[in-house]
Image 1 (tube, rainbow, N blue to C red):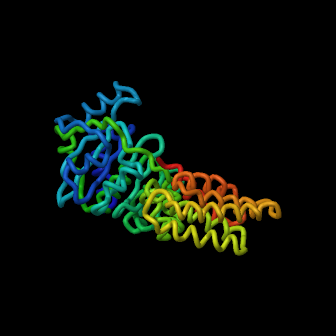
Image 2: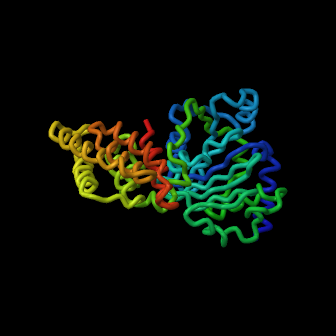
Image 3: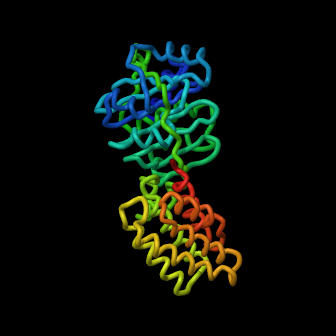
Length: 341
């Protein structure tokens, strides 16, 4: 059975040889062609009829900084197919999250770093890179479907491509049609690509990112500057064990700021914050190292301007090294989100 499947996709790749060079192939569940296209970029032009070969030849002559080209087709059972003959936008986490928002997306990327990935409901389930390894929420979920298909990390390179496409059929239950791929399909031009996530995928998948407060700031960094400042203050105190009545009062005040809706603190809050900051400054002469930094984080977090508070508190707190690995992840998330426009 596996041999027949491999032979089928070997034949497909021999007939559509342009896919072997530097293409990305993606199965997309519960999507029409126009719906799928919108997830590949911000500004698109299309559709217009074009074959894969024509699209590849155009891309080859346009240069690496030219607009991207995506060719789309409908597949059975509500699936859509996306093929980038010379590109891999469809493999980016920013794109795959959208493509998989209503179900499953499975992408295979050829070229110098062959790999495939399974996303479901916006989350990366498994990603396997031929030369390096695997990642994801359940990196071994595909092991049963991969049986008989030489597409695991370290598999022979000469059969990896057809094996990865065969795995795509097993995952989705949808076979790519050799003859249909040779006809005119819907071509879209990607004028503006989706922006890069400010927080890398590896951080988004860390258990810390699933904590409700961190999940909230990751979902809307620009709208949660005050929450970022509050979390930075709490993290600094937790990491260093800083204590005292001034610290307790500052954290209590920050907690009330964190639930306030305005982007800046009102007049009474500014007076309270100023008094608290003055009290905290009296602590710094007797402290050094991370504990002194923690006091400075508290002072910064009490700034009445949300953006200033988040930016300065995380800039200082990022230098605290007393909290271990998870604390380092939290600081990285906080600092990255504070700097997101």
